Length: 432
Image 1 (spheres, rainbow, N blue to C red):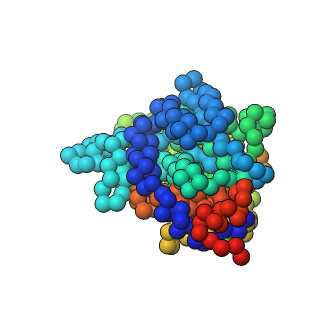
Image 2: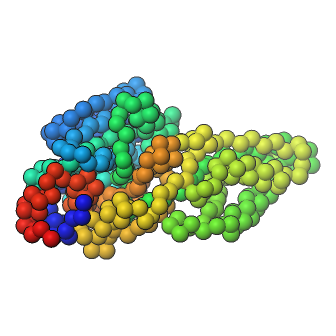
């Protein structure tokens, strides 16, 4: 349906700002570092029941680690819209020491300071989850009944960093349920990663490679008896940097730029001896259409080609498998799809300067929908990825509330309403 821009003003007037802010502060207050998702899931399940969602279900994707999902059934024949986000956050090591003696000291206290809500998970991505839930509540307050369904799913294990976690186990379980028919497939998906209310129809792909270079140790006085792994690593890194330059010249994506690799770590050395072993780590950025397998094979060929001594041994490991055994695939949908434009317009009308169509400079889990299920998906939510995973994680309240209104408007436009004439009357509009 076509919705007048005046509905944004009406929705904003109906918004209970205090309740929306209280929801976000309560969400931040539930510590949910990866592995501890249940603490936040219990909070969300309760809020979903208060909203009157039906078919609320939870299921463990690993012992003690549940997903939760539910829906608001529409009253007519409309499309099905899914909002999804991850429940886990990164760690808080060093947070209290960094902010000692200030109002920000407790990473889960969620203080409001100068129009911003602070805390671990504020942007990544509890503001997105809470803005989506608050948007449905706003439609209830405005007495707007949708024709289509609005579903919500909250999954764990998206973040990396905790031992034995961070392999997207939560969404793998949820997507498997869609494939088996246990969960109704949506027509469109909004993954609520922080975008500052921009809409991201494309995301990068990635893989991490850990390379172990093994030579032979020898006493420093007779280095000719050894095989210097650090010297070999110098040749490897030089070749990899050259390869990165070559990759960057191949193509440029209009939304996410060029591919490259970044060497992120180097460790090695010997105690007054020729270094026998060193390890280096790299991350490779991929564009949509690039094969992850082929890109990884290229890396290995470049590294092997840089080693001229047959006694130097190499080993490769890929520790960050996601929707691919080696890493995460890039993904995209057409940026000129009507849903993309409608969501962007909803955010632009909710807050000046927002609603741009851009590309995701990160990898998250939308590719499970776009690539595996063939369901179009985008990222959109309040929050700024640049301060997430840092001691400065916060969300601007104005942006958060604009996200609530923008999502509510998009729900109306995408799912439709049971009686468009009645909606216009409620909004104080005259039929065209």
